[in-house]
Amino acid sequence: MDQTVEIARDEQVELCKKGDNNAYFSIYERYAKPMLNSSMRILNNIADAEDMVQEAFIDAFNNLESFTYKSSFEAWLRRIVINKSISLLRKRKIAWSDMDLSGVAMDEPGEINEDQFAFDVQRVKAAIGALPENYRVIFNLFVIDELKQDEIASLLNISHTNVRTIYHRARKKVLDILNSSDHE
Image 1 (cartoon, one colour):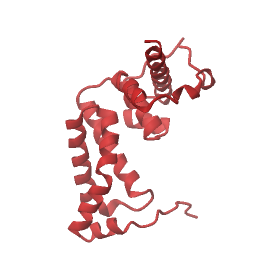
Image 2 (cartoon, one colour):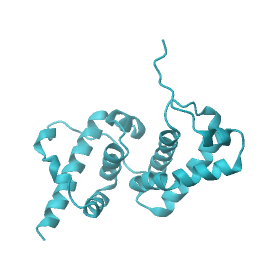
Image 3 (tube, one colour):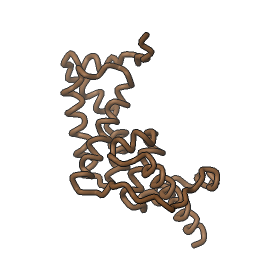
Image 4 (spheres, one colour):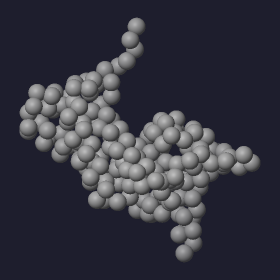
C-alpha cells in the first residue's frame, strides 16, 4: 500500500506544464523572494544568491514534468535552490570535511537556555551572519530551512555527527555573540 501523501495540485504549476507564460511569471513572482532568502542564508552574497535563484527557476521550469506533488512546489523549488547554492560553495572549495571528534565534549541540548533566542531579530541575523561560513550554512539549513540533520549531512557529504557538532557549536557561538553584545 502506497502511503505517500500527494500534495494538492497547484493551478499555476499545472498551467506552466501546459506552457502558459503568465503562469511562469506568476510562479516566479510568488517564490522569487523566499528562494532568494534561502540562497542568501547559504551564500551570504546577493549577486551569487540571485544567480542561483535564476538558475534554480530555469531548472525547475525545464523539469516541471518531473514534479509529482510528493511535496509542495515551494519545497521542491527550495531544494533546487539549496542544492545549487551548496554546489557553488563546493566550487569555491569550502572545506566540508569531517572533523576528528574523538575527545570532543558535545553540548547537551538542555545545557543552553533556548529562551535566549528570543533576542531582537536584527541582532540574531547579524550574529548568524558573523558565523564562519560552514557554521552559518549548517545553522541556517537546520534552523531556518528546517532540513533534518541527516539530510544536511547527505547534501554536504559529511557525517551526521559532524553536522550535529557544527550545529551545536554554531548555536553556542550565536548565543555568545548575542550575550557579548548585551554587555557592550
